[in-house]
Amino acid sequence: MYQRRVQVTGGGTLLVTLPKEWAAAMGVGQGTAVTLVPTPAGGLLLLPPAVRERNRCRILMDGKTPVQLLRDIIAHYVAGFEVIEVVGKRFRPEERRTIREIAQSLVGLEILGETQSAVTLTCVADVRDFPVDATIRRIHGITEAMWDDALQAFLARDEELARDVIERDGDVDRLVLLVARQFGLLLRDLLLEQEVGRSRQEFWHYQSVADQLERVADHAAKVCRAALALAAPPVPIFAERLTRLAQASRAVIAEAIRAFEERDPARANAVLEGKERPEEVWPWVQAAARDQPENALSLAIAADSLLRIREHGYNIAETALDASVSPPLPASI
Image (cartoon, rainbow, N blue to C red; front, side):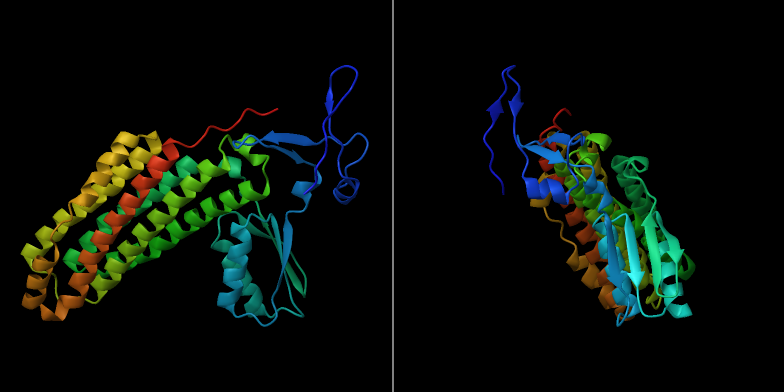
């Protein structure tokens, strides 16, 4: 931390000197254009041009399993690094194939260059080309379609449809990681706040909603795995009640998303009022399990997942309340 006293010139201009060692490290000198960014808290950030040029990192490949490498690359991708260099002693063909598959699983990540001992990845997905509100709507649309098909696959014991839903869970994961990366970029590059017109605090709310929707999609995939384990289609009375439960739970999510998009605290509170009226579910689930003991676990998983996605809807409604009171982004200087 540095402290400086404000000085006044003869013409009334206010001046503040910069720390010499910091200026030298960041390449700031006579004539350098720096950017001043006001923050919602009232502070003023000074950003030199070199800030954006430092947005690259290096990952050591040696000793890592494919899963560990995947986690490492995702962590740096989410952190907002533009260039990720994976280095090792000498890459085997299967290791290059692993890196290529990881790059293909992340939005905008491409292989920029390869040598015998290094693979350079770069992210070409510009935050301005993927408006976060549109991404959230896309994630919600995918999860809605997944639940339509998951319920159908479970009640009809449709194995092909169930496997299709499970595969679509990866599409949601890719988009959620993209939102997380965008938030990471905002934390690293404060100029983006003005360029995208959203504050870091506002973007944090979007990431929170994306995380909740990711869990909703995970439960759709979980129900489909339970469908694959069914010995026979569920009895009609269970199917009818499960369908009603699904309609109620999904309505909570849809209303919560609408409250978030419209920054509507009244709608968010209306959603949260349902949290105080828990639904009695387990008696009819247990009755169905007694009629079909071979399906007992799968039936319980389906009902439990529908109750859990309702909780995620309530979490989104709470985020909508938080977002409704977020301060606006200050005007640029």
